[in-house]
Length: 587
Image 1 (tube, rainbow, N blue to C red):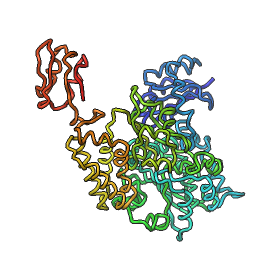
Image 2: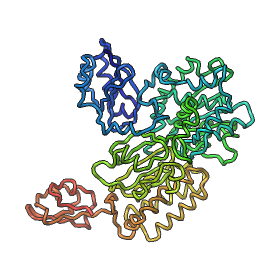
Image 3: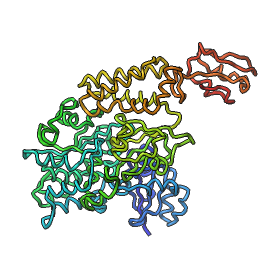
Image 4: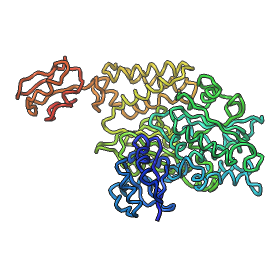
């Protein structure tokens, strides 16, 4: 009996020590029939490093939180056919539910195939769809491909949710022989890592989806614009492109057809605004990444003013599955307004964080509590930030909101590219709004006044509030600035920048008022607004707090109750940290 061991080496797995596990296993298995390989990210980031043991194509054991110290135990169990000896490392049934409750299409091969192996990808079905399309006896014309995508209802997964078929059709119908197909892999949202995981774990799915898109619009060149902060994704994509080219899937007369297409990668410098398609095009052309006025849209005048189509990684990752299974099969998933599945990066104060792909129509509560396992450390759910810095905060009262474009939009948030940041009771919503506003203010390209100056003014106001210097009327001023920026900003990123602030005010106005009127942070998160006092009945007079205080704000004698001088206290929190008797209260 022979086993195959796969070590999960996505970026998250490597950061947790997966490469060390692989290196420890390799010499132990060198002279055995057990084969050792790597795979990408299965999505269960909180359990990394993950090691899967297969017998043929059947998963026998999934081991989690593996370290190099476990290598000898794993090797011995595989050599001696005693896998039950690894039960202490095996994933629990509760954690396994993270995957069993998902429906995976874009992530269908992630964490299963070897991302470095063309053979592994082909075995999993890679390039079947493009082969079906280009087949000489009964293939699919470009118009039929576009019709199939139209039937599926696939909408762009980059955030706007615009119908994919419409963009493809517009680019196809645009005059001119020179056309371009572009992949937006400039994933800049804080807390989002869906596109990175797909490229690192299943690069051939992206390539095939782009080939199909290029065929549909009539493009002869495909470009992947990916941020340079994704070195592993770039390395694996470069290797996959070379493999696909050697196998005849990229280049001239692909599979003996009249269709030819080249591929190249552009590593971007990581500007958030380059997630906007026209800013991305400017960057591709060597210019500073700044949005263009629209119209004309890229379908008519994009890269080098030639007809171009841009979709993100997740959008293309769905395409081959749709061609193979039919548009109707994809449309059968989801809601009447939002078809198919959506990938989310579930992060924050969540027990089981990672990548989640679910059919549209599930509720936020189901994703956060059934798949994600709820809030960690026994704390209470407070809000979830959807759509990154362009999205909004959704409170507990709206946890049963259905996940689709319209329903999420009605809350003031957006689907976005799929960031889902969970917050608990310890999160200050004013500070959270400031965090996202800080990000968008710094990332503004500066082209339009409303975004460049408006976000800066909002940043200053929120900074005053969290520092205890908020003034009556600040909330109304923030709302006025939000409206002006939404109305006047040039691009979608500027227009949505106020969303985190607007939704925080809409659902947590009492927190803003407490900061401004009472100079108090209800979540005890804003250092400038915290106060400390010592309860005399709990203080044992150990003097530890007085010794630790850097400014001498604490007085008292040995074995007597101490007290804090609020005028001297700098609110460093050292007294609260070192007290062994819970005598120091933060309020």
